[in-house]
Image (cartoon, rainbow, N blue to C red; front, side, top):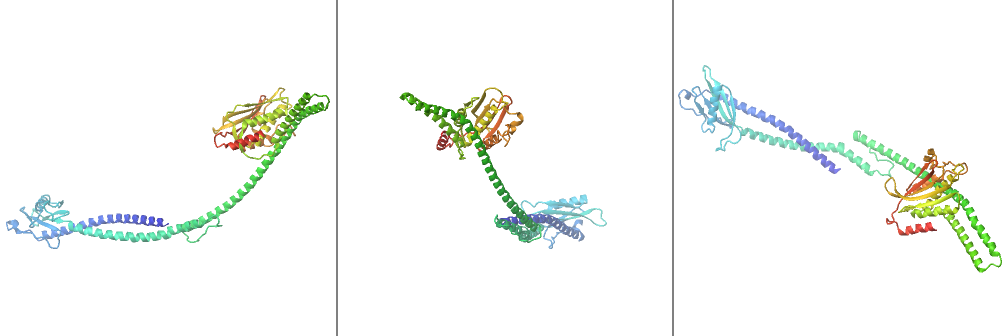
Length: 518
């Protein structure tokens, strides 16, 4: 605020001084004009006095007359007269005798008053400043010819007096400007700066910990009303902030509840998918168990040579390995998700899931994986990504095994390829295609809605693709559906690529591979 006071004082002083100087300049011009008129009036009175004294008899042939300069007016430099006979008489030692004589002759000829500004002689420095030539015609009663009287008058004394007056006035202007500036600054500080300081002080004292803004309650002018309005505004802001805090708290609770509900939906859908996988694997596990039971019956027989016994044991071990592998794959999918996002090789995970469905066994459907992505390192939760693939494959199976499906060999293909997302960034695109009846055009936009299903009651929850969409969105990817009725459907999703050399921490990549392998 100190700088504001200084700037305000200087600005007010400069404006006031400039304004007073302009007024003084105009007043000085009028004063100069009036002073010149007064000086010329004195000169005319002196000429009239000279003419009233009569003209010297020398004009009628007498002796020359010497004109003496008046002692009362020191500005007169030279006097001159011109009589009827045309004889010019000037005061002695006059440096301007020639222009004075020319002026007298011109007035007698023209009959009009003559005035002229003269320059001082170059070889004389005793007459500085402006010099005025003034000549008046004189008519004597009873005479037809004109006579003339004139003078040479210096304006230096008048200019000197004017300069002294101007200096005095300028001094008064400066003193008045200073006094008025101080007085004006005092009132400006009282009426403007002090209220602003009070507002700034109140704003500085206010903080989020205060329940209200301190209010002085002083002043009924505009600043007092501004202070009151500011107080009311801050009080309203405080109330709005409290309401916003409550709203944010409520939204956080709602978000927590939504996240909890989403996790429950994911777990429920995963349990349903696990049950369907287990039901499909039960038959596939039963076959090797039956084979192993037959081998055991053969091993109980007597008379087997060691070679046959070893062959039966090897075959039994192979079937046990197959059962163990199927159960491990099912457990890998069914185990609780850690929820950790790590670098994952997408094509390797796709191979594992497709192998699970292929070994799960369904003679009516052929499974294949087309892996043509040059880069497939992404960041995701491996378990969540498995669930997405399983949901997509189960939906494709249901479409191919539906009662109204076309009577042809079912085929499901999982395609992995590189592409660019809508932002132009590299991504891994995984598409699950089938050659079933497809999805009706009016349903394509609704397949990712929760609880939407085209299956018969009791054969689907309508949550599989919805949960999958949420998982992919959580990984920073996108998901969509494409269908041509009668030619099959395609469910695809894309995830941003993570370059192998971009901070893709090798330990994290190794953990990802170990998680996928085991």
